[in-house]
Length: 229
Ligand SMILES: *Cc1c(COP(=O)(O)O)cnc(C)c1O
Image (cartoon, rainbow, N blue to C red; front, side, top):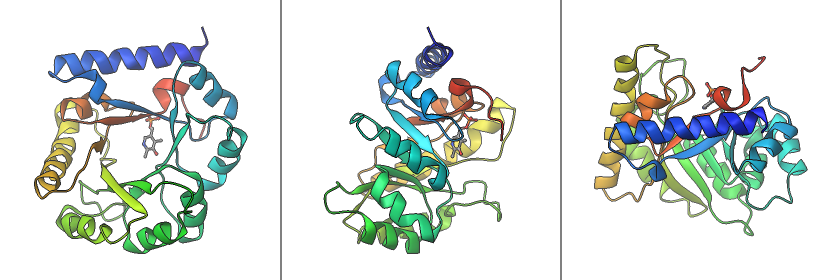
C-alpha cells in the first residue's frame, strides 16, 4: 500500500472516530484532499485509493495538474486560495467549486465567465470569523447581505461557508470560531438559504471542526506529508 493510501485510510478513521464521539454520522463529513504544492503523481495515488475531491490554492499551479488529469471524470476540483481578478476566468473554466469567495466583484466576474456548457459554479463564502484585518473573508456582520447579493448570479450556486481560523493548539480554543461559523450557517439556513456545506477544519484542527458541525474538512499535510513551502 502506498503511503498516501495509508494516510487516507488513517484520516478517514479519524473522521469516523470523531463523528462517533460527537454523535454525528461520518457520512455527513466529506474529505477534501488539499493537493496544493503536490505533484500529479500524488494526486493519482490518492485517486487510486478512492479520493476524487481535491483542493488547490494557486491557479497557476493548479491548471497544468487539472489538464493532465482531464480524462478523469470523477475528479472534482475546489479552488480554496485567494482569488485574483485576473485569474477568475481560469477558475470559472476549470473548477467545480470556489470556497474562497469574499468579494462581489469576483462573484460578478466568476458568474460572467462561467462557461454555458458547465453547470453553475458551486461557491462557499469565506468568512473571517476572527475578524483580523489582514486576513481574507467576509465579516460576520456583512455575511447576510453578501449571501443575499449572490442570489442575483444564476451561474453561481451558493452551497455554504468556509473559514480558516487563527491557529491555536488548544482544543477548546479551536472550537470557538467553528461554533461561530456553525451558528452563522444555521442562521442563513433559517432565513431560507438552501446550504449544505460547512467547510472547516484542516490537519491540526479537524476534530474541533467536526465537533462543531463541519460537513467538509480540508486536509493536506495528514494525507500527503509536510509541505516544503
Ligand atoms: C493548505 C490549506 C489546507 C490544508 O492544510 P493542512 O494543514 O495541510 O491540512 C486547508 N485549507 C486551506 C484553505 C489551505 O490553504
